[in-house]
Image 1 (cartoon, rainbow, N blue to C red):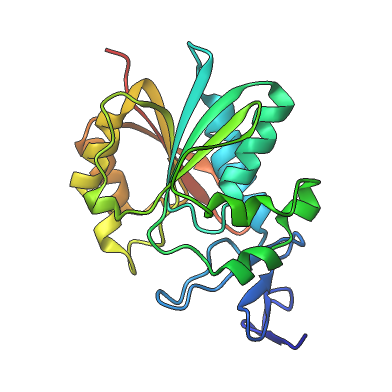
Image 2: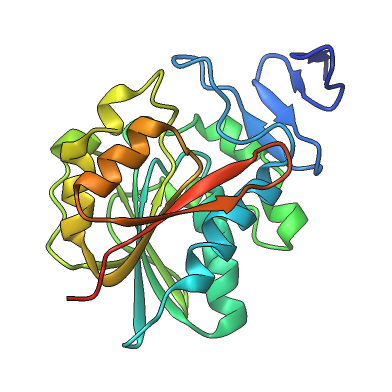
Length: 237
């Protein structure tokens, strides 16, 4: 397989033609999204970034008041956040009902090339299976997942349905329609009181859109290569 580097100053950030498969600094892969020109994950470490922003600051910070933890991901992408959440659910014996919104998933051959299952000691068939049907799938005794093949603008979640939202769309520069006040208003209403939204972006427009809708935001130290990121909470009534 032929390698070429995307960034001269970062020899780890190399891709394999023609798959757009990229090896990041923690040894895990990411992909280049052809339409936006952005990568699904940080070149400093795909698994490292997702663990830091979505698992530790999101999943591990949720207060669960019933038997099932409901998670919504906006931009399921490579499926890494879902895979990490599944591993967490199994190791903590916590039932998770996971909904992943994604209108344009990676190609099947790309999902099969990603090395996340190998690094996490999980089944290699899982990532392709995430996108194999739009029906809810019970993938383990502790984890069920439903892929929603729908634009965020058209998605109408039920009120107070989720404990946690992973907001992992591409950046506001290339997907401005995903980062609007209207969109965050929809997510505010979809979260339970005390619910959490976590996202890698810390841009001023994102902070304003969240606070305008009533979220209480925190700027938290980021993973390697990123100074800070946002965690937002719905206040208890």
